[in-house]
Image (cartoon, rainbow, N blue to C red):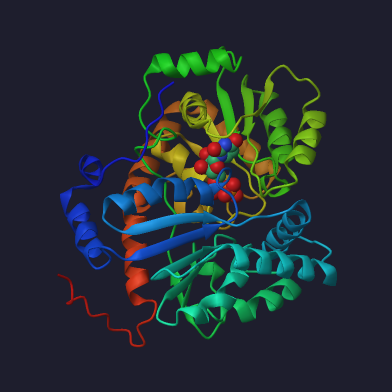
Amino acid sequence: MTQSHGATLTEYEPIIGSSAIEELRQLARYFRGKRVVMVNSTRVGGGVAEILSRMVPILLEMGIRVRWEVIEGSDPFYKVTKKFHNALHGKQESITPDMFEVFLEQGRHNARKLTLDDDVVFIHDPQPLTLVDGRARRPDATWVWRCHIDVSRPHPGVWGFLQPYILQYDAAVYSAPAFVQRLAMRQVLIAPSIDPLSDKNRELEPSVIDEVLRRLEIPRDRPIVTQVSRFDYLKDPLGVIDAFRRVRRSVKCRLVLAGGPATDDPEAEEVLALARERAKDDPEIHLLMLPPQSDIEINALQRASAVVVQKSLREGFGLTVSEALWKARPVVASAVGGIPLQVKHGYSGLLVHSIEGAAYAIRQLLNSPEYAKRLGENGREHVRQNFLLTRHLTDYLVTFLCARQRSDTIHLDNHQ
Ligand code: UDP
């Protein structure tokens, strides 16, 4: 199957209009020839890698010399960073002093490996946070910390440990208003985005959708309810199975839980095993562990679904929600993290708070196809206006420009 690579900016014009493209081009002129580095902890798996893989080619096309570096990890480091991730999301975790040392030691190792002398250094999430210790080497560079986690109720020990590093950045970027912390620094709100032209989101021929479902052995004999997510406790796959079983008491349907590995997530096997145990060889529950780069498969699964679910217990943003809405799919999702930005209850999907609530909402949508269709169509328009890659790039470029400004007035008058 052919894979789409980075699209050119002009290709987005029919979707978002020419003035938005022109605005982006104008902004990019301030950065022509400048060097930007993105740093995160994995090249595949999860929303951050998904965004960077689409964003980097477009920045290059706009003349910005961007590169994408991935820090090195080790099993103990990923175990620690996963615990930090959960703890920052407010999940109960036992954190011990030796974990901080593992984190710092890997940070020192990565600092020796990476030369970060670019004009803008953009660090994603906590894993590479301590690299900011090296910023003195180039004092005129702009350093931005991009937090993709819901840190509205963080574990105080982990947050307290990270805070001195965060404060060394020029700005911190969060996905939703509720995540902003009381920190004496510039804090910016930028919602993530999906790329409408990627293999994961572009239109697919019905024959391609049919072929994928056949290959994945998912019969089309009854409506399909799908959740696409890494196998992670916070995505609550077990809760999705329980909700599905309640729905099935009165409406025939199938459940697809599709997940894949992320190199920086050590819990996936364990959670998948628990989901298998809960599903107990139920022929109407399809648990799929998809290899990396299964973009067309995920696209086809979302498009083939009667309802897409995202029943997270905690969430940063939840790109999967925008992915489904862009395909005009009716969505049932938990009212956590950045999901309520995407799902306006009763307008662009249904927000839920429990397994029973999820079952009720799924059943409602399966029984009311006209209502479900309207929610999906509203959702697509909401995503078009708010959560596409082009808006995200515009916000990032403005942030790079403003991060070191000491006043609220930004002067955009020095471009060639
Ligand atoms: N994803 C994927 N394969 C999978 C599971 C998820 O490609 O098996 C993608 C999904 O389509 C989305 C991203 O990973 O683009 C997940 O982003 P999200 O913000 O929903 O959650 P995160 O994993 O970052 O917590």
